[in-house]
Image 1 (tube, rainbow, N blue to C red):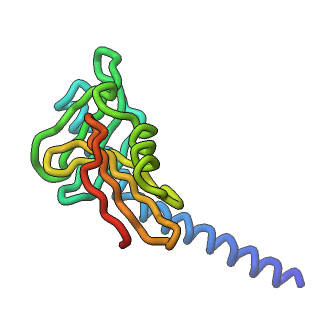
Image 2 (image 1 turned 180 degrees about the horizontal axis):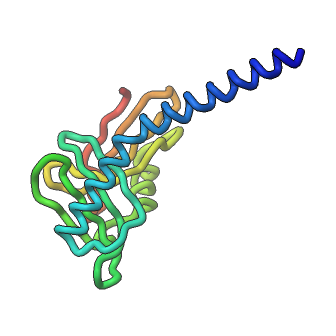
Length: 157
């Protein structure tokens, strides 16, 4: 009986170790991208600190950082993954995540919102809302960051 407990304990420890290894390897590219974006933003913009990072994968991939500039203002920095112009906007010059979601709820009836993230398409900053409808169909809804107008609505994927 004692032998089985030892064997099971060893197997559990091995499984936990393998799970941790898989998780760390899966998140490594995102951490590398975040460090790259942070370095670029600190060198080429007035960003001095950030509290939020995400990767937007549209027609062009962008790194998006939300933080503060050297004047203490809240800013958002869009950095193209490969090449292109870095865009910096004051957070107050656009709509909030909550306002973008309200726009969706005013026009659609989402069953579940899966994610809301900042992105960029054709040099236009936007909020991308990824949601499901009652039939479990996937939908994308893009809201212009500055005006709050709907830019694109992709339904029933």
